[in-house]
Amino acid sequence: MVAAVDIPPNIKGLTFDEVASRIALLGGEDAGVTLASRIYRGILQDGHRAIADIPGIAPDRRATAERLFSTGSLEMVSVNRSWDKSAKYAFRLADGNIVESVLLHHHGLWTVCVSSQAGCPLACRFCATGLMGLKRNLEAWEIVDQVVAVGRDAGIRVSDIVFMGMGEPLLNEDAVYQAATIMMATPGLQISRKRIVISTSGVVPAIHRFIEANHPWKLVFSLGAVVPEKRLKLMPIQERFGFDAFLDAVKRYERHRRGKHVTLEYVAIKNLTMGDDDIEAMRTHLTGFNLILNVIPLNPIGNDLVPPTMEEARDFTGRLRGLGFPVKVRYSGGKDQFAGCGQLGRTLLDAAGG
Image 1 (cartoon, helix red, strand yellow):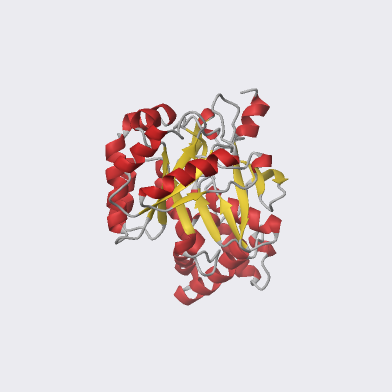
Image 2 (cartoon, helix red, strand yellow):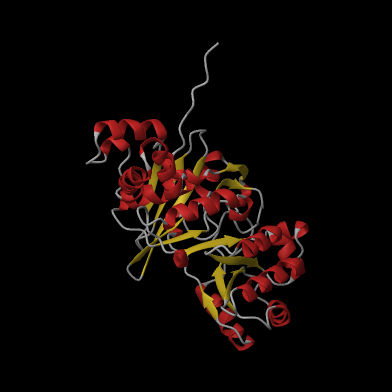
């Protein structure tokens, strides 16, 4: 019988304090913090692939660190670059599943849109990932490594993170919160808590847990549609968590933010979510609290839903501006590479004949 081999945890899935504590157990607290800083910065910030590649570490300490931590990485399968400086990255996980991430450029800053699941169980009709079904949740290190790998490949410093890639973040909340904490570490990626955004389709109990835990990041909410019957057809999650319960959770989050606006994301779909009844539903359901409505023109994913023209989208948003809250049309970067909102997984489905 072959003895089981203990595999050390991936350092990209540990907070800085967790790394320092593990080292300190062997060499004293001061030594732990000093060595942890050097290793953490080397792997997460400087992009070294292995502890042995980090300069300035004594051989005995390097050997100790290599016993304590692994530094395995996702396999980068492809990079598809767009004319607008965005790029879509595909990564193969150890079990063969593939996830996609997107690099976005805006006003001189770089954002990475990360995936939190391989596939997604929610089956939203406007999202290609939802057509894949759920393969599995990602581990914290697999989320963090998307950022490390993209930054290293593009030669840029990532300033912003949006959990808007493949999967529903609040169905993998522990790993997502661990990853977000790791991203903020000063010796590591140094991403401000104010520049980490987590999007949810409405996992109501998890929204309440987020509020009660007083997490420092920002939630945004995928509304999809406002007419409850239309939203149910587009987003089956409403069968589990009703429309009123979802809006109540959003309003509680707005109060938790002490009156700061909350962001709702609305999908503009021709002949479906852009009618007078949709506008009246917004007037009924979306007044009385502080919000910004981001209107996202549907990005085609190969089903029967029809995207509006840009002129139709502008006309629709113009009709919304009298409702008493700010309305913005959200640009989707990388649409020519199927990297726009709702398109992640489209290439994988095509390759599989789905």
